[in-house]
Length: 523
Image 1: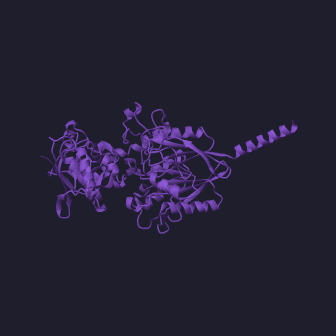
Image 2: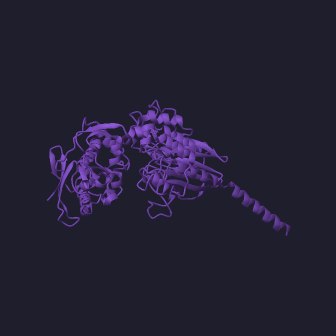
Image 3: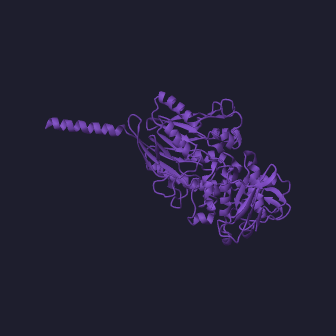
């Protein structure tokens, strides 16, 4: 009996030791916040105060503050990290650049973030100012910054933090094509993310770090490639592709986490609409045993932290000056009436499509397509303020560039004119091309002729040729029935804000004169 009791006690002690050897960690994460310090509506754009009070809005720094505090209180071991692109997207960034982002991230207690491509939108100097202001490391492994004086010896590839007596290695990643997407300047040389990650994993492992998390602003597809092509990575916290991963929603792009080669990959959409929460357990050898969780929706059920809300309200006051800022002069009223822009060529449609195409023409883009429903107002003659531009374009859409065949462009135009009788928002305003359509024909058979402008003038569209297209990110994601855009090649959905593009175009016009030129006509 004594021997049996000793054996049982020994087994119990071994079991307890094994349990104690496990290491539990809660990873809280955000990505692609894009300066959404105030709550957003269901379209990811600004939310009116009365709608927020009515419980119709999401996100905002004040809700995130509450959610993060609540999550931390539920676990005795956590970290808070970000997958990049805190910069750009609202007037808060236009006015404060990275200063308000640094203030809020410090206040919320972030432990680390990776550099997103938009962190370079105003060059390395603004990124450096942000890095100097934050109280946590900002990381990027897949770039050589030794020749860039603002970043050399400051921007690190990885870092090691300690939690509950254990070392955790954090590695940063940014898109390899950031030099094409943003403004890092000639002194920052980007490289393959998988090779960069493996190099840092090997170095950290040699230092005895056996728990490794990659903060990757590279996109869901690239994250899966990195997981497949590297060894030693445990978790990838993603960004850039604005991917919603979930185990409960039928709108998710994949499970949370997505497992590839034993690596747990997570991402939490964008704009502060969700707070990602991943609960992980490592064994005594640093091997990831389990990873479970779900992005937490930042809806009206999450109360807003009063102090943070008051600070954001204070920060918003100077933005009224921007809204009143005169960006250009209009020689005549610019017609953006709903019934006009959703049924035929309209002056506002020409302005916006022309501005879009002019912004990216040098990138091999041939044509622009803008949905008429995205144009929400007209502009009077005389001074044009930024507030008026924002009234016309309130959705905080970004430019999307991609490639389609001529046949796919015709298919897109067919969709655009398919619901004219309903005055639907999908009606296509265009630049760089002309089209003729027949309202007497059934939907899907209405496009009669499409001409694309080339070096020698307009020529019939070639069904088999690839053309460069610019639209807004809402349409590129299939909005307003433009499902064919989801099949595009070489797509990039996170260009500059559409309102910024139009304001800059107007400012460069030295007095804008609205016009119609017959680019859209009916038979």
